[in-house]
Length: 259
Ligand code: SAM
Image (cartoon, rainbow, N blue to C red; front, side):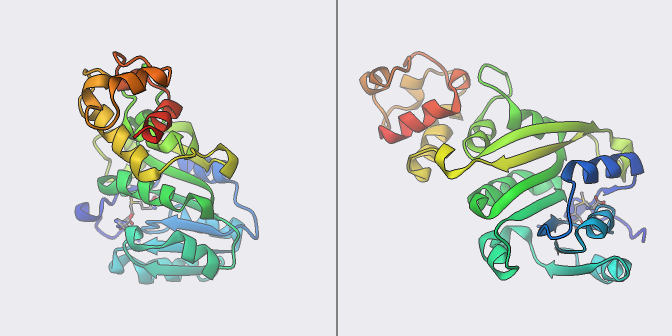
């Protein structure tokens, strides 16, 4: 226990029992669930999750933490530790390998790569039942933001097109060792059922969302020049003078399908 936390791995170990209990209660793992934790660290969340799920998988990049974690888990349940960068883990293949229909993913994420991890998980959404993540509160606010909000942007649209996003509670810096500089928050992501997923080309949706938010203050007819012309935007029932920050996620799909 109590290894020196490494800044380069984004290590902030959660030690406040009250927040750990709230996270585990929010996940409510059951015997038989296929739980996968991203970045178990010293096992603050792993041990209570393992106690409930009986067997689980954890993905950790820092080799130094693995033997201690394995030892701590020995009497609790069956912990399989995958030593890897989570961005290299194919969750669809992992679910198949673990014989699970879908995975329950959880983690107090390393903040330096939180957005890439979110996008990576969304790519494998069909193999995921739900996700519970601790992130910077500012990121959770952006994930859940609605059109018209100052923080509504690419992250909000791309995540909300794939998942139901529910912010759960805020966690103060003092709950971690060392304390991060910002407030954190726990969020639940539940992938949408296939019939609610956008019917459109993912690459085009990404292109439209990226272009539309590249200059937040500009109108759609400006930002989408070269992708969708003004008359087409109007024909879709969308005001070409509107700005991306006012458009609901579904409108970006309509625009993408008009490319
Ligand atoms: N779950 C522990 C806790 O709550 O105390 C540790 C959380 S700490 C914020 C993030 C963890 O992610 C660290 O254990 C760190 O080593 C690990 N990590 C960092 N980058 C990673 C990556 N690319 N892939 C997998 N794990 C990573």
